[in-house]
Image (cartoon, rainbow, N blue to C red; front, side, top):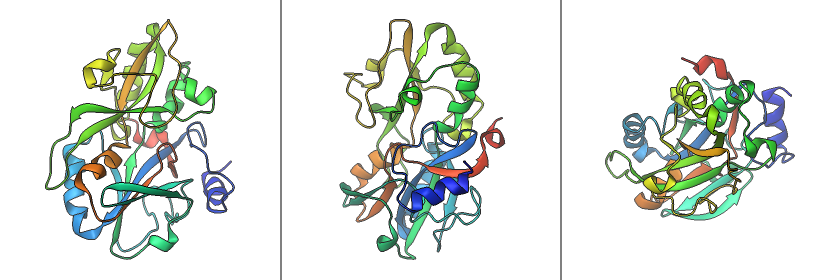
Length: 255
């Protein structure tokens, strides 16, 4: 299915699941929407924390994309959105048309779902894709570089990788720096503050088999974690795992 057709399904409410494994070969993006007065500071925050928050597109005074897709409507073309008030999650919704005002700025941020096609094409199995689950995501103790009011800790995604394929997975993903690049940690979750790997903070629990090692990548849910600290009066994010499907090919971001 073409990416535009897939987004149309979403906008009609006919698809509301995590997007891992869908529209393979095309870039997926996280989304953050915040009031204009905070936008410049957050953009600088993203630049100083590029591994966790690689900003691909910024949209002001509009809700239509220009870079990642030709006039995609960000108010209704993601499967699920999270609404935050004063830093607290209040609800998930299927579109955000009623919340839009010209005071809001949209940020689209690189997503590790993008490099999954390259991993799979290389024969590296991804259990969450095979089982049609959301990826497992965890809060960590990895501090971000502070900019203005924006501060907090990194969120990571985890994929179990067979021991003899870990180095290859590291090399493949390092070629996608705007999609979080190579892993931030391999094999030792306790070193980044993860106490129980069977209980992710976001997404689904994924089995790790004896011949596998848990590999952790920076995750685009990081801005959601930051929102809990800075307590903006209002913000919107994609629901974890429910990404914006773009018209840009993965290969365009391979370096």
